[in-house]
Amino acid sequence: NTSFPVSICTWGFVDANAKAGQTLEQGVKALDAAIAGVAIEEENLTNTTVGKGGAPDRDGQVTLDACVMDSSGDCGAVVCVQNITNVALLAKKVMTETPHVILAAKGAEDFAYTQGFKKENLLTEASKKAWEDWKKTSEYKPIINIENHDTIGMLCLDKDGDIAGACTTSGLSYKMKGRVGDSPIIGSGLFVDNQVGGAAATGLGEEILKTVGSFLIVELMRNGMHPQQACEEAINRIVNKNKNHKDFQAAYIAINKAGQTGSYCIHPGFAYMKYQHGKNERILSKAFLKA
Ligand code: SD4
Picture 1 (cartoon, rainbow, N blue to C red):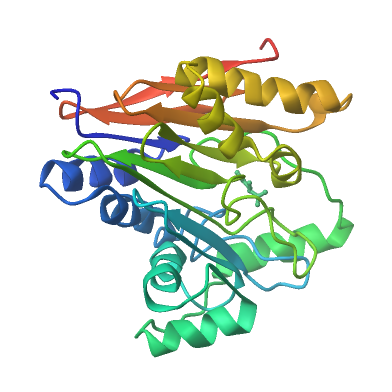
Picture 2 (tube, rainbow, N blue to C red):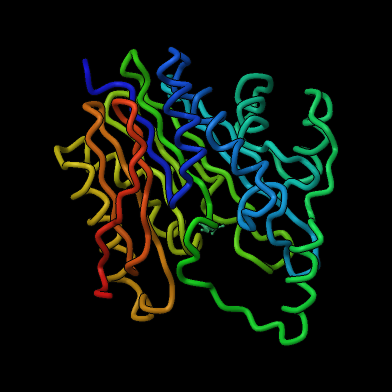
């Protein structure tokens, strides 16, 4: 099929998506391409919502969440991990090297060292300074859209037509210690069913968790919806149960087996990247609210 391979990811992560797309073109399988793509942002010190350089929790600790899901239906996740940069790869190791699906906190970190991961300080001077400034008022508000600086959820459709995905984040800035969002939770931040397609989320994780949005989107696609329609329905579920939906952002991206894609969000300003036929395109998402 000439529409393969395809890679999509949340927000304007041009380099990460190009990396995934080019990796797919070389014939690498979907999961490894997605992990290679998101690693670009995990290692990007100027991205304050993913990996190294991510904003800390209110106590000044950077804690990361990530998950991966493979075409086989297998998955792995790590939550609230410190000192490890490439947590999507670590989530894959949980999937392939342990009998479990999720490892948390110190357990995940200690497991990482057994797999050869390096201990790194994830708190950059810039993120530390921003946290110290925040502490002066300690006002906690979800920030709506910060272009190019957000959670990365990535879905890859490889040359064989197989779909897999990865999602990785430092979570909400200045979250409570121990807080885990949607991003590492299979079905919420990410879901893939290789017979149907995949979906990934970004935005206020608590609302995505309550509606198990990525699983919902895949099920809607299974029942015949186009990825675009399915993303719209999943956002509508969040909007309909929240009178205060104007106060936060939530966004989804989705892809089906034919390589058709879609996205929808609450507030205008969300965009996703799509790599196909050697072209890496930024697609502005339709939104529930008007600009
Ligand atoms: C979370 N969904 O931890 C993540 C945050 C996010 O863009 O997507 N930021 O709730």
